[in-house]
Image (cartoon, rainbow, N blue to C red):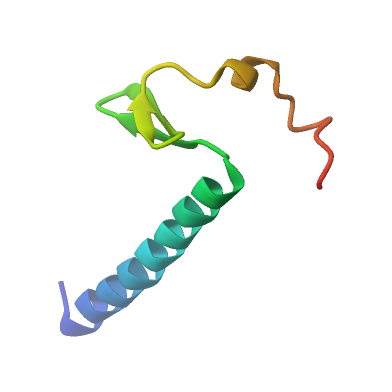
Length: 69
């Protein structure tokens, strides 16, 4: 890997990680679960906890019919 490529990758990762952390925090403030895949297992972070089960309302949520409030 060239120095230029390495510098680009490091800069890109820094920007992406910063955006990711901001999105996580925004979701927490809005009460929206953060959803991750850990070793192929879907994991939900919400209400200050991490669970393999989504919130009860999650299954009924349809983003196509959600109203932006």
